[in-house]
Amino acid sequence: MLSLLSLQLCLPLLMVAGAPTAPTVSLPYGTFEGFNSGNLTQFLGLPFAQAGRFEYPREPSTFSGVQKAIKYGPACPQQHESTPPGEPFKQNTYAVVSEDCLTLDIFRPTGVDSTTKLPVLVWLYGGGWEVGDSRDFNLTPAVERSIQIGEPFVAVTINYRLSVFGWLMGKEAAAAGLNNLGMRDQIFALEWVERYIHLFSGDPKRVTLGGQSAGSISAAFLTMDNAQNSNTLFRGVWLESGPPNHIPRQTDDQSIYDFVVSSTNCADADDTIECLQHVPYDTLMTAVNNTADFLAYRSLNLVWTPRIDGELILKSPWLAVQEGAYAKIPIVGGVCEDEGTIFALSSLNITTDAEFLGYVHSNFFPETSSDELAEIARLYPSDPAQGSPFNTGTQFQVSPEYKRVAAFIGDMAMVSPLRFLAEHASSRQDVWTWLVEANQAAGGAVGAYHLSDIPIWLTTTTSLGTQGMDALVNFVNTLDPNQHLTQGSSATVWPKHNTPSAGGNSSLIVFADDGVRVAADNYRQEGMDYLNSLRLKEASMD
Image (cartoon, rainbow, N blue to C red):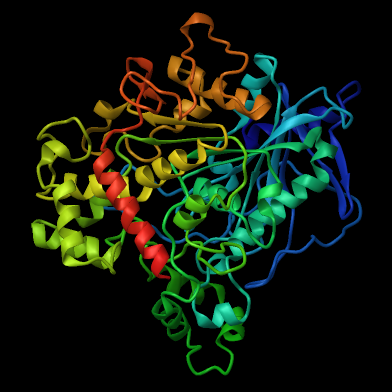
């Protein structure tokens, strides 16, 4: 893809005689001009909604003339992330950040017109609902690969509001109906795709929803039954390191809301929501940046997160999965071997068994008994040979409890809820799962960490990447990652999750440095079964 600078230099050349006409699309609220780059046509920074602070998204304002859609829109406001020693996550910076950020980007093959109806991939970026932007995950290689193998599709990446702007909590927000605004943005964008993607050569009846990390978890929540019927807006879901996992209620964490209110001098206001709506942006962001982020000690006990509100998220995800209260559509999902390592680097001060149990109890399982905590300690022992990065013996024990904390966090937040979903859903719909072990040795103390699998799905520079990207392209086209295998005999057939394998009654695909293989999805079974049982117990008590 051309860089923005190169594009700006080349634009005058498009005006010479014989140069191709820039692509345009007319929407009810205005006409947009995109650009061609290689074999792709791109429309960047298209507004799909407008919303004031703490308002619902609505249709953009109309305008006359033609608006250029040749650069990404502003990023939504970003929380400042901590940087523990050894942390591989590097926070992106964006030239323009604004509360007016509800835009999307479209990438389609060139040479197609509005009568063509290609399948569509809608992608939600990750970032813990604190950071991120639609440009973070470059889908152009996947669209280019789809053209190359004769399975073209249209890709859409969307922005949604973050932190306090999208995920306000507390009784005041609940009373005002300001629940899960970021999720409302996601649903509004999917509804926009349903209405308008045919103008961009996409088929609104063949939409796959995908995402990574928080984007994947958001996609999983959108599959669940809710008052907005969001799970009717797509026909398949691709979950990359983000299953439906534990979330608080809308009225939980009142102390965080109260902190934001007091930090912005709104505590004495008659209407604290209205006061927050008029607080200067920098003042509000200072308050946000003084709350815990996902790389701080609190880790994945997130401050800013989707919440059970009785409307968009009706109940605990564990209950929804157990009861089958989610869309009966094909699912592909997976995790990395060492999902918890990057989130454990902020708790290196935990050095004893008692401190580990205190951390688990205060952050993740506050309602568990001492006997239940003791069972967690048994299943996730302080023995570094059983910790994460896994299968590394006593290496990388950067603090006395680091590998233990990393093993627990990864299984608790990512691996066990995916296993729970796969075990239940595979009895009623098509489910495929994966595990990424690749690059574990190169990762050192963080191993095959959360985010490290992105090259497998979004590049073709390696054999693993080619097979991974082809699986994604296949699924977007046919709802089966195996269809139209392009690697011939070298491609590994991906069995459904409920297919018996040599190691057990389930199957997944393992992406490893030495290739791709099929294995049973039963690693660390006892520990993850127990964590899931605790979550179900909690959910039944709500």
